[in-house]
Length: 327
Image (tube, rainbow, N blue to C red; front, side, top):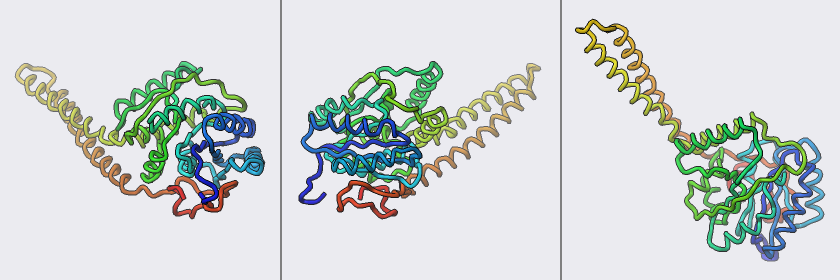
């Protein structure tokens, strides 16, 4: 920021994709709520390749209000990379990330700020309830259970990433250079002081959700890959169990020999499980190598910007090679 324009106390980052029906309303609601709790704030809209009128409305909002800024991506970069990149471009002492469709209530901004001022470095909204089909609820339950069992750090059920993050949190996570950032997991992994604000998630204000089953499945798989690196070691553990089973079958075949039991069937099964154990062992070793390579190659841009709107001159669009970190 320039000397004449000090950094805002609060930045609110709102990722958008085809949100023409909501973007103006969410900006108005966020501005009204932020004005009640902080002296200075900014709103950053990051558009992920919208094909409706979202971008035109963003231009109007930026022209009408100097607190509103926009980043237009040159294509759709998915639900992980674009929102996280938007957070990294914020300059506030605290940064809030939220959806454009009012399912993340702007009314919680005050509660988030209060928890932050009380000492929390991460404040996450936690859904108490949400209308969903039994199949979707079961899928989420199984997903949380799987991540809880194999994840590298605890998973917070109902926390979708809607929350407030201290400046230190944003700067620390930006430096990690994660190519597919599972941000809601990263903030837990980082170990910063965390507070939860429970809420009942409302219905979407207008338009249709972009999160169909395919999008949710893709997000879940990316999150699992990014937050459960130990899962790559699962074949190693399965190899041990398969080897033990092969040994038991071999012992059973040895005992069955003098007793006239099914010796050859037991020995055949023992050989099959032994070969399976060897195969899993090599798969586990390959997975471990993949994990190590992934740890060493985090230098992929999160997005490539097409245009910036409303940003001060000292926060102009960064070079493509620096698009992971804040400019």
